[in-house]
Length: 614
Image 1 (cartoon, one colour):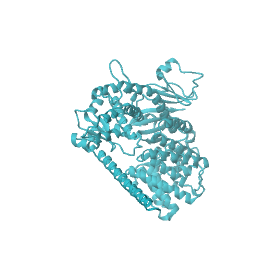
Image 2 (cartoon, one colour; image 1 turned 90 degrees about the vertical axis):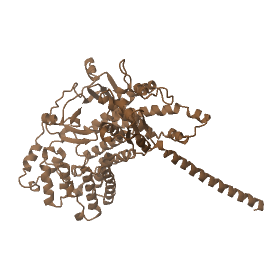
Image 3 (tube, one colour; image 1 turned 90 degrees about the horizontal axis):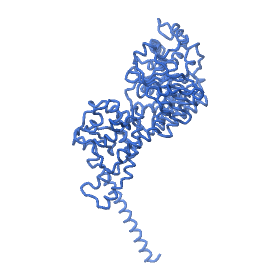
Image 4 (cartoon, helix red, strand yellow; image 1 turned 135 degrees about the vertical axis):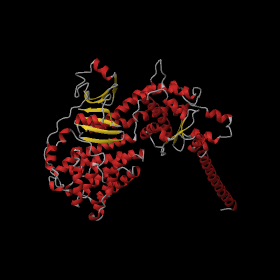
């Protein structure tokens, strides 16, 4: 190499080093500037709390209840956990989301939303406003905030101002947030169709809201008329989507897994939320349980599993069942496929929202069931390790839930059975003792190696015999050994009564149309249509007839399910008229009571809907 070439090479190297240093310094400056923008006072919740003061959440229980319902179904792919802060600003109507995940709502905005309307309409309005902001959070729509902070105190040039005033993208963001906020509010159970209705006496909500907050002249937002029209057009599409979700869930709870899963998959294509993934997994889990030996499937009374049943014909105890010893337990291949599908869907639900406890619980149950098969100890150990991880995550999210604590104890016990000394396997502490039948049943199972302790729990479970699911009664009675229980308990009489075929419990409400009716041969009459409402919604292979008091699902033009919405009753009146249900199933928004071929959905002690399946 010549001296000149050597000098040129050194210059190139020095230039490269200088350029690299400049790039690093530039990157550090950009990061510092971004951090400075993020920490600009107006981009943080504390600024608004210190400026206006925070309204005590305890005084706004209904408001925070609506927020929790909408937050539960909203997309949280941003990775931030949304929080609501209501500030005591009575002058400005404001609702916006910050980059730290906080949704700030002013007292004035809350007054505009709630004043002079029925509570149900106020809830729907609030759910939509909160859903709109949650949609912005999911989309990470904070670029405008950062730009505004960057130019704070130094106005941008005319060229930058002109560029920033191009509003089409901003308007699309607002319309998209409206669309998703509408869905979130609807999924939360609020009557969003009221928001886009208008009459000579009332305005639609968006027109009213825009006028009240004084935003008519803000060109960065779409007009209220455009926003309302978009929601009206989308309402039919969204109603179709929501009907697929709701009827899918109802069919799964009614034991019609194939049809229910098909509707849930139809909904998933439109809105892949954590709930639909969880419910898809739940349906596959239930199918797996139906295909597995009962001794394996129901060895433990797991939360949320044993309260869903097969049709009535398989629920009566006509004879003692033949039992298999544990060493012979096998999971049929078709059931294993369902369990693996269930695990996959639960993992997708968790990916949508890592704080969604039901998916962690269901995932733990799925891996526990896979781990109970004794044929391959290494595989069982791996499955139980996954179950332990999922149950620990669920317990961290709901540390005071005794059902989840029991699930974690069961998983730890089963792991020790495989990996350690079975005699020293940890049992749950006495703190889990309660009047809950599920806990007594599981404690009896876990202490089966110590008969004097197990007997006490079997006896407590037997004392609640009428409240036990039929599957659990079957397993208790199949032991066919009164010596398991303390003296004085008439096991034979209890089990003999349970083996007597149960009389069908008549529903205290009448069906407006019989199920299994062929609508091609016998279509709905004009009178029936007026009763149901004129709206007919076409799903993939199904039709929904939706009215104010009844929703009807037809599968292949055969009426398959009716949902009675305008019903009255409480848990006390149900017990009085119909006795104990076959099962009680806790759900996120209440409890399901199963009576033969119909299910009552109760929330806050009142009957909200009745589902009648063919």
